[in-house]
Amino acid sequence: MSDNDVSNTVRPPTKRIRSDHDHSKASTKASEASRDSESKEEDKNEDNHEDEEWLKQPPFSVGADKDGWETKWRESCWCGKVAFVYNEDPSNSKICHCEDCQRLHGAPYQHSVIFHKKNVRLDSDADPKWIGFLSAHGQVHPLSSTPTPLPRKVSCRACGSPLMDEGRNMIMAFPPSFEWTRTHKEVKQAKEDDKNKDNDDNNNEKKGSHGSEGDSGKGARKQQGFPSELRAQCHIFYERRCVDVKDGLPKWRGHKEQSELMGEDEK
Image (cartoon, rainbow, N blue to C red; front, top):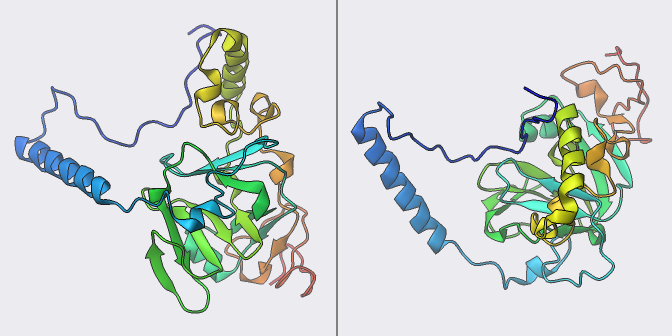
């Protein structure tokens, strides 16, 4: 393989496609075909949210004036049906070790970055019908396709990926879902894309209309590694942790500056 051959790191399609030479039983194929047909029928019957008032409000802002908007970051779910764009860097970032975050994310902790709602929009190529809402504080409201009471969690109903926690004025988004350059092959691919950019008449239409190629903006794709703008500044509820994290960041027993600091190995 030559240096010019760069593997494509774009997320593969999620729909499984069988070969004509697949040796699975015909009954299995027929069953899957039936489910596909039912799924398409359900899609047709999904509520159309395009005229819903909540979609016109932050952090969705569907139909908002794009003058002066310049996308700096893009966040998307695993299957790609739901995506948000951001025009500023986050104001804060933290890692939370509380039980709620552990259970809701199925992970040892939640890493979140904080933005004002005015700096967030639903990307123009996202499908609103796949947005899911869950109120997980106080009285729990089951996952819904329409907004539940604040504060609430916003996710993709197709793949289940969590995308943000929404409050009255701010949102907390999750950096692992942001689009940033993870491998050296992606850096090489970005440079190749730049070489061909002038010859690609459709380049600015690839990922919605908030930013060229739907990338994170300002050259972030040409640098490998986790962006410094998204790095955590502290840990909270560290006493409840599943794992010790020895990263040198401040570790708060409870909320930041409202509890005592802990050592990285302290119980």
